[in-house]
Length: 308
Image (cartoon, rainbow, N blue to C red):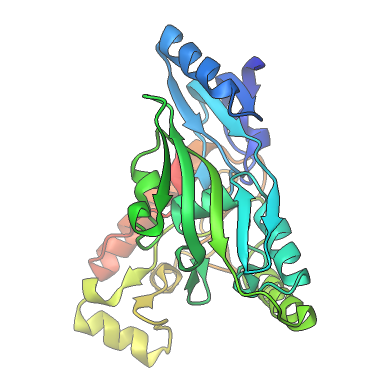
């Protein structure tokens, strides 16, 4: 197992922001995990498991511990629709492969960034679908006590943009078992996938470094009737939620910029890196957004992203 020192983390996330990690290692084999745990215990350091870095803001001072980068990117497809996939498998690749083989179930995730492991941790979703709907099992190892466990779907405690693994980040996900539907026309599935990709290109500021939606959408149950009626008039209610972008835009924050960080004019729930933005710039913009939205609508925006 190779452990590197002083590795710049801006190169390992989609925001292109962040200072150095004191230590950094890539885990390619489960046999390395015992050595890794011994290193963590011996040096008495914190650790963080890094996936694709598509939902993560890393602070300018970096991370005074060890960054663990899993490299389990295999996938096996079975005739009954079961798919066994390593946690590091790139989501765009997985979605394309599944659709191209005629396996239905992931086409809604066309253009979804990051890894399948990260999608599990955050219960990633869009267009009315969530990754939890496809999960059979999740295999993971606890980096504090070396316990290996296979989690059934109900053990994963999936919620809106949340899971057991997000709340208990000492668990390193190694493998996921998904249930898809085989035997579909691959051209139809690929068509849907590309429609989702094109929608993202049209609606999201993908031409700039970003980490996706900054804030969680608002549940109708958490809002007063006045706000719900306002959103209903503007036809922005999506299922049981109102997009956070709606309230950010209504607060007049589109295009607001601090340093190199800017609230996208294309999508108000995206902060984009328009030129050497620092984490401090982004955090200042997040606080400004929360304050302005709370002052105008008396609601609290909750972060969807992780801050390290």
